Image (tube, rainbow, N blue to C red; front, side):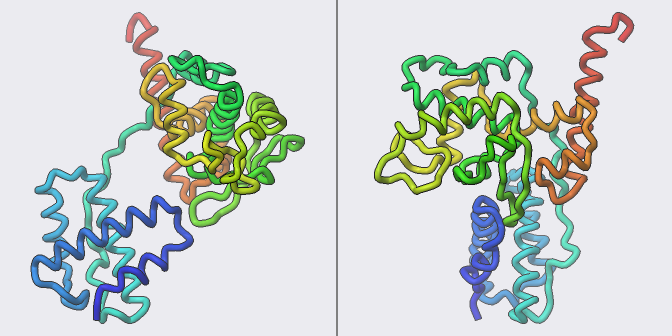
Length: 294
């Protein structure tokens, strides 16, 4: 039998596109490495070979976080093989991998956030057409005001926005739906965009219902959003930094951690707990910079 990679990838249909791509790439890389060792069937793979592969990755100077992700992909793959009785045993069970570094997310400073969200601001590109500027205002306000992932933002449709109820319906990882509130600034910016600016960007290529569209009239992609931030932000900024900033500001303001978990669409509370560490770090930093006896 072969490694059945295409069938495995199809089994990931409910996962986010980025997750499917990462798992496919990780498993394909492992299969190619095993193939160079003469392995042609997953039943030939044992736990020792898997551990050798993780050691090989370490010698190639992959980060501990990357190795942990690749190990997770391999475990997912062999669990699928075993579930479909394509291997007699699962050699990846209890396969240990180094834990990823606990890096705290970057939070935008008040001045960085203000410069980014200033209505109509285009940074070093003041000649951006007014409809594009209005679109950028709306998408940035939703990214920060509702804490969306960039892929969630790009997939929004007009029907997902309820301006009267001041809320947005989001389809998150694993096809899970959640409804999150919109800030006043996000409602106002989105209203301006939808009522007038969006029609100026529509072309024959526009998919009916897509909320955010680029200058070619196509649904915006995460790369398009990154370009917006590159144009407007005074410092290098990733779209996810707005989500991190949103979550940290909620925790700083006293929001219950389980409420923040629900708003962010996290499957596990442990993922959300990092923002308590971020807030603690910010408090310590403020203390050290302001207290004369620190």
